[in-house]
Length: 462
Ligand SMILES: NC(=O)c1ccc[n+]([C@@H]2O[C@H](COP(=O)([O-])OP(=O)(O)OC[C@H]3O[C@@H](n4cnc5c(N)ncnc54)[C@H](O)[C@@H]3O)[C@@H](O)[C@H]2O)c1
Image (tube, rainbow, N blue to C red; front, side, top):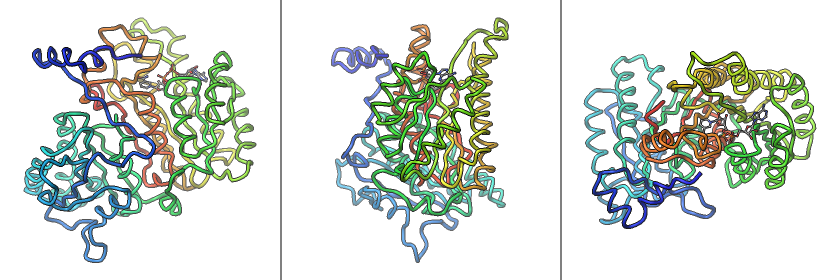
């Protein structure tokens, strides 16, 4: 679906009118391209706080700057050393030492001048600690304060820049941080804005050490609802990252499904996820796929989803059952069957597709919101269970994404959906796909039980 308004205000006369009337002028977001540098400019690394930092130890040196340098960034420790006129690609703050109230003031004051120097589609990324794990009440409070700070900065940034907060559990360190840090500073996270992600100790030690060009080589990735939209883009990105893709969709969509599968040199499986024999058929198919040469881990992306919108008072049983059946009951049943069959082992990944409507509620979507909040609940409950076998469960929660699903929304509401996000536009299917692929990577072994919104910091559900 084209965003005609955005196209218009990007023309010279359109921009002039929009400026005069104070209308939103959405930026063109920098998205991942092969061979492109990690960032559009140098990454400034700052440290804040009066407490002990996880990174600035005498032995380790400044591990945060080293992680960024290893990822390909030009890491700088001093803004004064960045030539005048050079725009920053990112500012990354080690806030693990933020333990006292005045630390927040110092952090804010240090961040200001750096934010002023940010370039287009730049990143502001804070690295803190998970408050729930801190015994010191003031330390927990000010660490929580970082969330308010980051979410506000996200709303103030311009030109496609985004903000984020990664919070480390006490047993997590640079090894677990590496993958999430790379993702959140890169162009792959173009539409992930104002998000907080907790990082724990890796569920599977070997995982965090496996990086490289094709982090998903050896993975068999099943994507439901892969005939079009977000599912198709997810199949494409997972395949680009090296996974062997099994694309699933209803038999009626088998033409489009074949196109997805052929395009990624994967397999097509025509299957209604709500069919009584769906778990059995999926398990049998995946058993054979995992038997293939080099296949060593399973990635499951529960993407198939439907809407049947009505106000609660007009929602009949059929609309409730259809939506809950596809969006929630099927992911629950399929995951259970894969667990029972022993297919979710070390390194496996379950990724649910929730929705900001599920997290915040949305008029006319009681059935859909219940199903999508259910997906968030599913991955949170699965995480500890999967952790025991070295696997993770997470969800992405897309906001307004330009697909056939959102093309059905009435025009005025569609404009509202796009413009009320901090990035002032809808996301693309590839934006959700990149987040799913990141969660599927071995380097995300410390990320589990998380729900990551891919919503451009939408007002709804932010
Ligand atoms: N587009 C958005 O803005 C948005 C926002 C939040 C969440 N989501 C979620 O993202 C997912 C993908 O959305 P989309 O916009 O690409 O939707 P879409 O309607 O374009 O595609 C959904 C796909 O799922 C398939 N599907 C439906 N029922 C199925 C079943 N029973 N068995 C197998 N496949 C089935 C459809 O055939 C279709 O190919 C959905 O779960 C949706 O709820 C989308």
